[in-house]
Length: 211
Image (cartoon, rainbow, N blue to C red; front, side, top):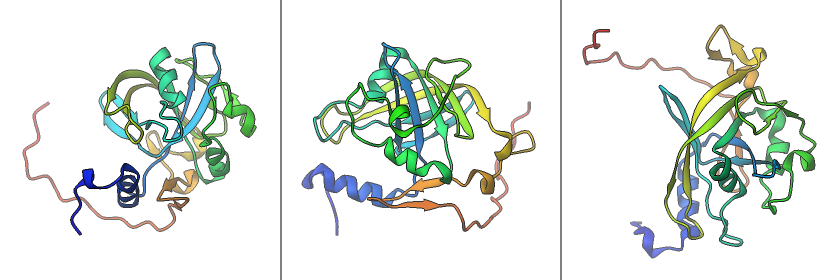
């Protein structure tokens, strides 16, 4: 079957994309609005951009329910700050609860009973029980489309990192068995990282630049 995206409803294209690009990492994004009210929401359109400077992105789509932007986007646009909370299997129920489409006055920390922890360099709070946090300053927001099914790319520079020692190996390696990461699949499906295998990368065929 050959598909021209414009020939199908965007919701069908969404199903094909999210059923093909997987598993996807989940960024649990905490923000504050201008009144200081916290918001917490998971995004599976999330990833690392680069390490110098350390940069991450998440992509809030326009809500299909009311064609409005997500609260996370509005808050980042207003304050220029957000926190990425990296979590493991022990917090999947709380993460799922914060995916609810709710009005801006809701506080997802309160409705889930999640305890906050203060950040060191930005205003939004962290999820205390999450073992890794990236405190971020906004780099830029790229608008793709303001219609339902469209969205934005929010790019942030990581200015501070918290890593719980229980998931840290040495100075700079994350222990996967301790973190127990969870990935997003399609529909209501998620996946655990339980079946690992290792492969060596091919050696580079280009000359290393002199330092």
